[in-house]
Each structure stands twice: as C-alpha cells, then as structure tokens.
Image (tube, protein in one colour):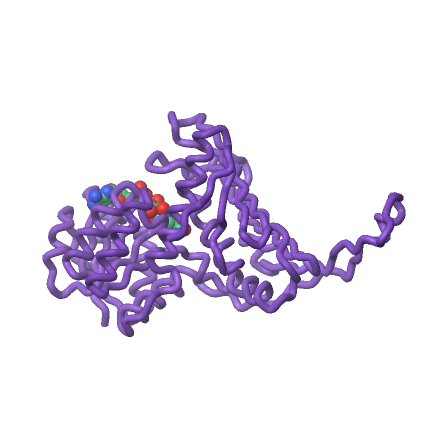
Amino acid sequence: MIRVGLVGVGHWGPNVVRSLEGTGRAEVKQICDLNEAALKKIGERHAARTTTSFDDLLGDGELDAIAIATPVPTHFKLAKAALEAGKHVLMEKPLTATSEEGRELIRIADERGLVLMVGHVFEYNATIRALKDLINAGELGTIQYMSFSRTNLGPVRTDVNAFWDLASHDVSIMSYFLGEPPMDVTARGQAWLNKDVEDAVFATFGFASGALAHVDVSWLNPRKVRQITVVGDKKMAVWDDLALQHPIQIFDRHVELPDISDTYLEHKTAVVDGGVFSPSVRLNQPLAEECTHFIDCVENKETPQSDGRNGLQVVLALEAATASMRNASAVTPIDRA
Ligand SMILES: NC(=O)c1ccc[n+]([C@@H]2O[C@H](COP(=O)([O-])OP(=O)(O)OC[C@H]3O[C@@H](n4cnc5c(N)ncnc54)[C@H](O)[C@@H]3O)[C@@H](O)[C@H]2O)c1
C-alpha cells in the first residue's frame, strides 16, 4: 500500500483523492489545504487526517508520496519541499509556472531517484490512446494538420490564463499523437475579465514534420466543446470528448488532385469519399488510469509516461506561446526539455 499525502482540495483535488484510493493500492493518509472550509468538507467524507500545515505532510515519515492539486503559482515551492523531504510527487498540470522551476524539480527528482509525474490526464484517456494507435498504425496517412477546440463558460481562473489552464492538455495531446513536441508557435489572446489574464487564446504550433496544430481555448464561450480534428493525407479523424457513444469518427476522405486541375468539376471529382466509421473503444476513467500508473511507477521505480520532462516540454510550449502573445504574435521557437 502506497501512503499518500494530498495538498489542495478545491475543485480538482477531491477527484484525485477518490481516484488514488480507487486503485485499491494507495491510502490517502493526510490532506492539507489552507482553507478550513474545504478541509471540513473533505473531512466529512474521508478518514484522512486534515491539516492546514504542509509541514505536517513533509514531516510524516510514513508518507511515500505527495499529490499536489493547488493553483499553478504554488506548484514549484510545494513540489520542491516534497521532493527534498524524499517524497514521490504527483503534480497537477501544468508542472510549474516557469521552465526554470520545472528544470529544478527534474534535477532534484533525478538526484534522489524519486518519481515526478504530471497529471496530463488525456494521455491516460482510452479514446485519445485509441486515436494515437490509429495515427501510429498509419491509418490516417501522413498527418498534415490538427485542430483543437476547448471552450466553455468558466471556470474562470486568475492564477493562470486560459491558455496555461486549458491548452496544457492540448499541447500534451498533440505531442503524444505525433511523438514529438512542437518546434514553434504563434499566438494571440485577449483579456477582458481580469487584467492581463487572457480569457480566449488562438495559437498555431508548427512541427518539424511540417504538420500544424491549431488550438482555440476559451472560458468565455457559450458552448462546452472538447474536440480534435486530425487531418491526414489518407483519412481524417474527429474526436469529441462529449460524444460518449462515438467519441472517434474516421472519415475515409481525401483529395486526389489530377495532374491538370483547372476546372471546378475536375476539382470536385478529385474528392475521394469512402464514408465514415466509428471504431468502438472501451471507455475508461482517465484519472483512475493516471493514478494507477503513478502507483505502478512508485512501486516499480519506473519513469512515468507523463514524467517531469514531458511536463517541462509542455511548460516550454506554453511559455513560448506567452512570449508570442506579448510580441505581436511573432512565430516563437520552442526550446527542447
Ligand atoms: N486535470 C484536469 O483536468 C484538471 C482540472 C481542474 C484543475 N486541474 C489542476 O488542479 C490544480 C488545482 O486546480 P483547482 O481548480 O482545484 O483549483 P482551486 O482553486 O479550486 O483549488 C485549489 C485549492 O488549493 C488550496 N491551496 C492554495 N494554496 C495552497 C497552499 N499553499 N497550501 C495548501 N493549500 C493551498 C486552496 O485553498 C484551494 O482549496 C491546478 O493545477 C489545475 O490546473 C486539473
């Protein structure tokens, strides 16, 4: 049994508590939050000891690991202290507020042989994994571009902008799909609700392969959308997280241009349409899968799929997008972790 302390039981933390314990191989022994009301609420449903002092978790020699689900600006300080106290860390996304902080956490975790894992939860989602398998198998052909939409009305954050909050998922997914991180980005966003905290951001990432990935994120949109379109030169795919029956649709469609194509009719006939099909995918609970993977890695001393370097690479992409937004949307290179 892996004994875990968890810090931060606001919106997301209680889900992590439930999912860790749901593995049957972890006990959440202590829960910390600065907010007494949040602690009282979780204390009514859970047997763990509750505390407002993070030092109680650091000083508990029985804890193997600490899970962190607090706002992004607190991630570095809490994770550094946890690693220095010899605890494995499961960190909510994004890893840190800066790449410098991310590098420091990786260094400490490596030095001490500790697991540092980031909760890039979509990398543990069965439907995202199924789509990656199709891409890897060449089912879509060469990937030309991808388009990501992640919108909703709220929740509005103030610790990070909509890009750091929402697009951290999309950057992790696009890199997972293509097996490489994006190499550059151009981004534009606007803040209306809170000064300097962009509510909507549009960004386009470029990959060394020539593929593009457009990301559209907003917490100021009337519709909840969680969609990805992947366009290959053989087939195209649409993933819709909210379409529970058929989350993945494969469109057997592409364009075959004749040698000479100067009329509309010729162009029209160049579209090859073999229909649409939906592969059946057994749905899973991605957060439960993520927590199981964390426990596996702690028990077997293995490197997680979404390890510190994977998390740092996402932070580097988010940083480059921010730099682009602050510099008239200039195409900005993304450093490698
Ligand atoms: N994977 C996902 O889909 C997903 C979804 C939502 C949030 N998150 C991530 O989870 C983290 C938390 O987000 P949230 O929406 O739950 O935020 P939240 O503001 O609802 O909750 C954060 C909690 O942390 C507590 N806290 C803040 N600083 C603290 C400190 N120094 N010590 C102890 N407690 C402290 C606050 O009192 C609050 O209860 C963020 O990193 C966010 O990106 C991930």
